[in-house]
Amino acid sequence: MNLGIYRSWHAATAAVVVLLLLAWHLAAPEPFGSRSDRNVLYLLTTGWVAFAAYVVLAAYAARRAAHRLRLSPEFAWKVPLPALEQAQSALRELGNRAARREFTDKATLRREATAIVRRFGVHKVLRVDVVPATTGLGALTLRTGPREPLGRLASWLSAHVFYGFAAAIVVWLHGGGRCGSTMGLWLNVLSYFVIGSGLFGALMWTFGPTWLTRAERELSIEKAFALREHYREKLAQARGKPQREAEAAAAAVADAQRAADEAAADAQRDERPAAELDGARKKAAEKQAEFARLSRWIAESRSAAPAVPNAQATADALQEKLEAAEAAAKKAVADSQRTTRTEAEKAAQKKAAQKKADDVLKAKKKSDELQAGLAAAQERLQTDVAVLAGQFEAVAREAARLGRLRTLLRGWRLLHVPCSVLLLGLVVVHAISILYY
Image (cartoon, rainbow, N blue to C red; front, side, top):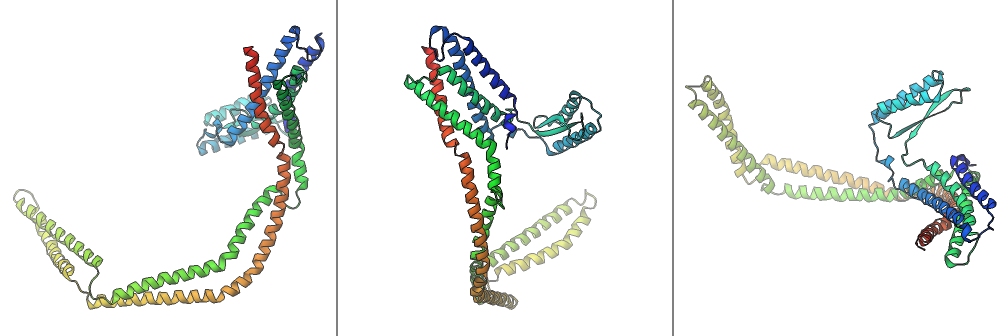
């Protein structure tokens, strides 16, 4: 059973408030539900206490929504991972010291732990609690967890449950069960719906996990949902695998044939392609620019020779490179003016075309093999598909059964949530009308 929410100081607070209001009513001379002037203070007190309880109930819903939508401050607080690891290492060492009973009181151990998280700058994201250890009587240990500046959701849930119970009794004391007006009728009806569905929800929260665990057979509900998606994906992949491989092979044949046709057509041409001519012209321009640059450097070096040491030696060294650059430039210019291919280029193009044709044959052979074996592969696959389909159906049935049970355990929210929204709105209207009149 899930009894964690019942171990809370909110239970004591709610019980004290309800008992005080009951004692006040029993001690007062007025009958139950009296609307006389002598009972106004009691009515106002119970009304505002009920209103405060409803505010707390609504605040829990807002806190839960903020956490689910990742709007809580803790999601925006980040620290470097090395700092967090160093802090956790230091806290483990402090925990070991506590296990050796070097600390005799909680306050000292808590101060040491707080100093560690502040020293490493992780105090905004890491919470450290000092709790009794299970290793021996009087021993202490540390328990770490993420910090939640708006309060832990478990604590908010406890407040929601117990202040909800208190609100039910306080509303009964406040209204006396009267439904003389439309507002009174709706307030009472909605209050009883909200409280009744809330009590049922608390029962489901307490015993629901146990019932769900007992209903689980070989698979838990989480594993059933995960396996259902896994088998669905595997089944879809298995059913289309041979066909996809054959289609991919056919596409590869088409691509190879297209490339081979382009290479064969190119090998039949004597003229050089426009792209090749553009590349040759660009190369010729680069060689001419290099020749002109060397010529300029040589001229500048020779003009500076009388005044600058080693200028003439530099010019002579550049002269040797100039001759090679001039020859390369002339060759590049001649190559750029040639519009027909040489015999060597023709042979290279024919060789490339033959290689493309060989690639087509290889792709066709692979495609033919896959097409020939497609029927056999699909027949062999039927056994695997049947096994996967059987496993998928079994897991899907189990997941559906557990999902229906979980939906039943959560079905009370369909009544509780909309009634709570309507009730909160009417309570606000009721409070405003009391203040106004």
